[in-house]
Length: 517
Image 1 (cartoon, rainbow, N blue to C red):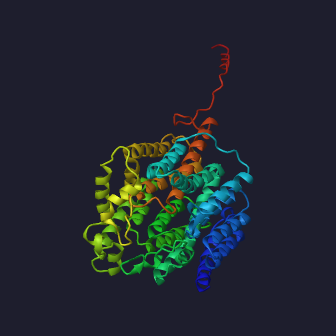
Image 2 (image 1 turned 180 degrees about the horizontal axis):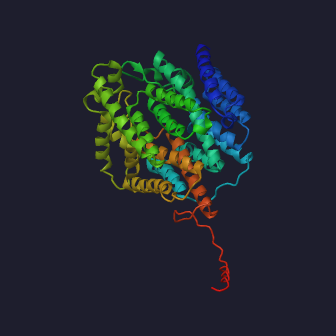
Image 3 (image 1 turned 135 degrees about the vertical axis):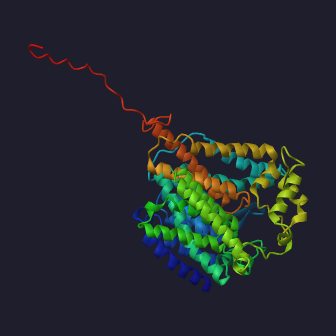
């Protein structure tokens, strides 16, 4: 009960402040029903007898407190931020169907709810696009290529797990977010959830206590989960709050910061908007993630370039470089900065950076099966010589993971589709004058580039697939909106504003000459 009281006290501090700073549009999705939802589900985390009861209760409370289709999507994004990853090992009798977390159940329930309650009514965006092909290939790689048909039962179980992790979030965002305004509200909810998480992150890093980890460990059915309170660097706890680890939280904060750049109109005052950005940045620092902090700076530079603020982009890049130099220099005299840079690490990382070692060994094994790769289980056996402290091979490089599982046959087409998605967002917008569309386009491009960079040092787990699906659905929506504007005559496909039609008329008759002329 003590932990629950602390969690709710921190929520009672952060929520009213954040709520008072936002406008009426966003308040509709984070009002009293949202508070009741969070309080009840968090309480269930400490008193539910099992993960099955917790996940079922969370699903019922969520369905009872959402209003319509759009509110369901917004609540799912808030759940991604604020609900810990409680995993339920699903059995039907003696048959084991796999591990599913609370976000999987909420995703499926809210997807069906959106079909049953389509208000506010809007026409669905139909048609197969490059984003759909991208998601289908991701599913194929992490399902078929990963397993290589070991057995029919295992193949189907893994397929169900991948479907709920990849396809369900994508369908939720793809089918139930039907306009640029709706997509901006969803992004604003992501920003709101991150603001609440920032205070939790500061508390965890300050007092060295992973509070949400208590819920996860208590309901973890396999009994092998290690407490997140041991995830430290330089003697200080790396905050992870509701996420699986500090990297996942840092990743979430980095993307939330990118989103906040364009959410100025959802926050009442400019000073409040600046404070909001600073709060999220402090939360990011509490994770002690060097890569994600650098990605935040990169994201801001890219955002400025997309919005054609080249001077600000140059100044931001220069400021980031100077700050990095000062941090490296200060680490010689500060144990805190040295811990942040991991200069006092021991073991494998102290002799040879684990990521470099993983890349070297992974490429060695991958080149043995360069075209089509091999099963993930076989690849991990071959990489047992680089196990980490928990006696696992931590594949903290998604591209290497894809190369090992599918070879060039999977990695190259995926890269081509990602390039096509990015090009689709860059080319053909010179004539567009819709400010909301251009704003969302800028944030989707920035989020996608930051995501592509971060996947080089992160695993494809936890919130990563869900947020990638949000970006893919946003890219698809922007393509539809651009096509609609071009069809309506707002802009010409050539990138030049369509000239007004000129009506030909007879020239006026010449005035008669004066007498005597």
